[in-house]
Amino acid sequence: MTVTPFQQVPLRSVDINTPPEEVVRILKEDGTVTVKNFIDPELVQKLQEEINPTIAAFPLGPNHESEVYKVTIGSKTKQVANLVTVSETFRHKILNHSFMHEVTDRVFRPDWGDYWMNRSSILHIEPGEKAQIVHQDLPLYRVNDYRTPDQPEFMLNYFVALTEFREDNGATRLIPGSHRWDGKSPRPTYEQGVPALLQPGDAILLFGSLFHAAGANNANENRRALAVSMHPCHFTPLESHLHISRETVETMTPLAQKMIGWRSLDNHNGVPIWMAGDRRMEKIIGLKAAEEKGDVDV
Image 1 (tube, rainbow, N blue to C red):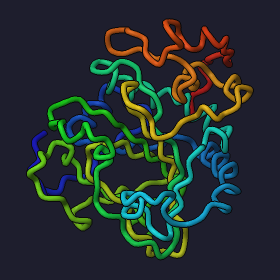
Image 2 (cartoon, one colour):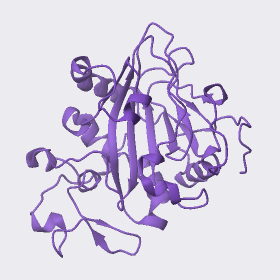
Image 3 (tube, helix red, strand yellow):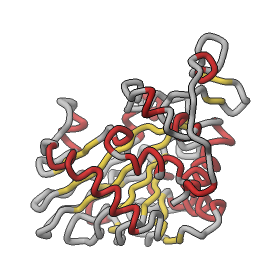
């Protein structure tokens, strides 16, 4: 799908029963796709209950002094990370979401091999917040300066609505097809973005190369999302989980443990990386894990 800059393209939507191959096909064409019923209402409610105390105590505004954070995180926004510690639902359910892994595996494995979680966070936007600047996430990595649009993607984000997403309360705006623009294309404007209108539990999938922005919250209620960012095992995640207690980690499945860097990974040639010397980390430290079951899906 070839898209001329500033040619507005509608967002395409699928549901959780759509074959992962079809979801990946749309992703590669548009750079984004909406998935209805990504998690069920009961799980949304549990996650909200677990994160509410942390969000209530968290300060508004940028988390760091970095100019990137100052520009992208507004004064009425809370971006809360460390969800593995904060939420049992996140570490046992979301991190084992089979549809998420079926899609992510098909995006990354042919070119990169294994992948792990770059970061997880809650994006909480309060009334009165201004629109975010339109941006891509890949420029966080210097190597992006040498990447061309025809090369493999190295970031896939999942934004899961925990509240309704409407135009008036800050629905995320996306520019489908912009992941294929070259560096000579002018930056799109906020008005050129297409708002993703979601119900709680719906998700937006988007590549880190896609232009997007959180909308302005002109309503009298908060807009909240769960953000899970994945990238290949070759890249160092934004978020470390070495501080998580071993007791907590050993309640998690091997898949979830690998997502947070407690197990070795394999590149596209099957060569293990993130090793303890010349042996797999989990073997050296004798890591225990919860059994992976078919009922961990959401």
